[in-house]
Structure formats: C-alpha cells, structure tokens
Length: 352
Image (tube, rainbow, N blue to C red; front, side, top):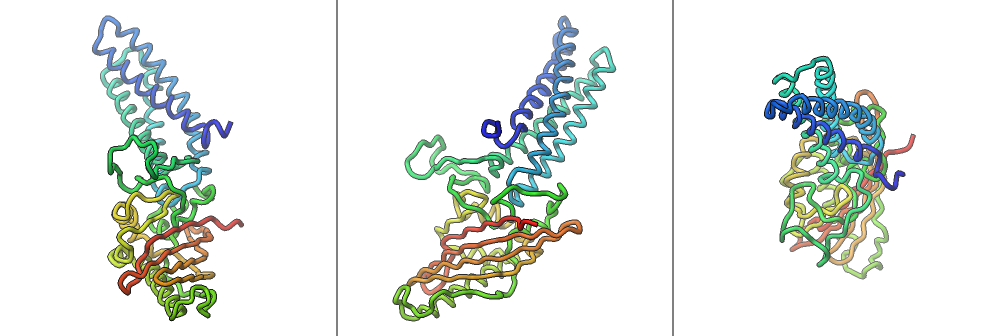
C-alpha cells in the first residue's frame, strides 16, 4: 500500500477535510440565502461539518506521521513547522464550530461566520501543504526529466522562484535530504540558527586534505600542483564567505552559467537560486560547527574539481545532532580567476 499512497495516508485524508469543511461553509451560507430550504441546508451543513471533524482527526494523525518520517531539508522544515501550526489552529477551530453547531438548533449569522473562518483556515493550511509538495518536493519519489524537447506545457521561459527547478537529480548541502529526517523532538533545528547548522558552510580549518597525485602525470600540464593549490584555496575562501554571510562574495564566485544542484533537483537559474534561496539563508549560516575530514582536488588545465567530506554538529534545545556532509565544487578558470561552474551539496544524519 505504501507504493500506492506516497509517502503515507495524509495526502488522501487531507482532501476530505478540505472538501467537507468548505462544502459545510457553503451550505451554512445557503441557510441565509434560501429561506424556504434553510432547514434542509442546515442539516446538510451540520452533518458535513461533523464529518469533516471526524476525518480531521485521522488527517492530523497521518500528518504527524509524515512530519516525522518524510525526508526533507532545513528550508522545507521551516515550512513544515508553519504548516503544522496552521493545521493545529484550523483543526481546533473546526472542532469548536462543530461542537457549537451540535449544541444549537438554529443557524445564526455568527455560526455562519464561524464556518467561514474554518474554511479560510483549512484553505490556508492546504495551500502551505501544496507548497511543501510542489515547491519543496516533499514525498515526491520521482520528478519528470524536463530537459530537451520533451513534453512541456509551460510557457517559454516560465519559472517560479526558489522551488522552480528542472527535475534533475542532486542534493543540497542541507543535512537531511538523503534519508528520512529524524526528529528526536518535533521542534528540533526549527529555529533560524539551526538552518545554518545544516548547511555545513562554517569556516573550519582543514584537518587533512589529499591533493591526489602531484606529479603532474594526470594531465601533463605545467604547474599542475600550483593549479590544484590555487583551486583548493579558492574553494576554502568560497566556504569561508558562506560561513561569514558574505553574499556578494559568494554570488561573485559563480560563473554566469553555473549549475546548482539543490534540494534533490537542478535549479532553474543561478539568479533565482541566489536571490530566493541562498540570500535569505546567509544570515543563518554562522551557527554551523563543521569539521573537515578530507578534501580531494583534481585538475586539468583550466578546470578543477574540489570534493570535501566533513561532519556537522548541530545543537538544538540542549540536544546534539551529527551529520555526514559532502560538497562538490566544479571550478573553471575564467581569465585568470576561478569561478564555480557547478556545486552539489548533500548530507545525512550520523546513525547513533
């Protein structure tokens, strides 16, 4: 059954909550607009609302199960917490109005207004849930390959910010994308400072790194070791700028046609990524505690690839969370200066 409903029952049940709550509100309004059928509409409105309350109990249970099991990154986690808050408020309002409608016989204008509030809260919660799926990709096991001249309904050049991405594989530098996100406490690392923890952009000295074969036999280029050292220096400067929250330096480090793999997809454009994702996160990147385990550099002519393996330590509400993190920087020498042509981040929790 898990292969039929991905990742659990929440996507199915939530549609009943939304449909029943909104339908109930419509019939409550009709009791005031069509007086001759007011009694019939009142019965339908109440039963629909009571049904919504019953289904909502199941929706909440499935939602909490999804919150603690669906793989996601730190950015999506913030939206998940907001979605959860609105869901609890909407559910509470729905239960109150349902009990209210049960205790009264006549449908008052105040009860109609209460039903409209419930519909609005449920609709807002549903919108945030849609954001999680369509913008952040939660629960999505496969995305279509939109490259090339394939099937495409979008207008030419259409895109939306941050979540708009072509469906390429790849992970962000966030600390929980590669496997199920485990919450010892459902509020863990939800604070702003914790977002930075999971990125692994903190500036730590390199404990060890491996430049590979420095004899130049890999490519036969004169000054091969110097090229590798220069590439490594640039990569560490790039990491330091991220850690310092220096957005201008980071943005200037990318080549104009740079490709970013983030959140399991390929970003539609560099500008969109910088403005709508990285820039809002820059103030939160200083809290990471990072230990570099190993760096490798491969260079050929004006190209270099720097891979970094590290561990991240995150303290949240008195608890510590540790992660393995890897970063791949594909660098290109442009008129004597290194530029990031491609970046790929991914991380996973360290099993305890």
